[in-house]
Image (cartoon, rainbow, N blue to C red):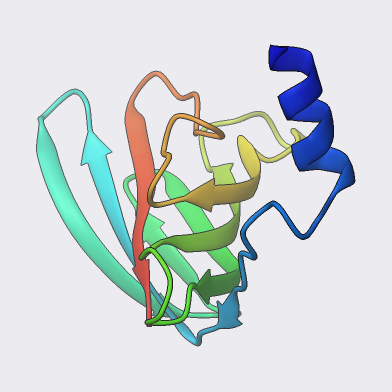
Length: 119
C-alpha cells in the first residue's frame, strides 16, 4: 500500500503540491566557529564572496518560496578553505536549504555554515 502511494505521488503530478521558488538577490547566512563557539550572521549578494575564518563562501544563487507557500530558502554555495592544499577542490559545492539544513551540509572540522533566508 505504501509503495502504491509513493508511486501515485511521483507519477501523478496533480496530486503533489507545487513548490515554486522565486530568485532573490541577497543571502543571510549563519556561520559557526566550532573552536571558539562564535556565531556570526553574514549577508551578501548573489555573485559575491564572503569570508569567515579561513573559509571563502561564494553565493551562486539564492531562492525563496512565495509568501503564499510554506516559508523556505535555498542557496547555492561554493566554499573554499585557504588552509587546504593548493589545487584542492572546494570544501563544499551545492544547494543548502534553510528548512532542512541536514539535507546537504558543509562537513568541516572547524566551521558550520547554513542558509537562514534569501531576500
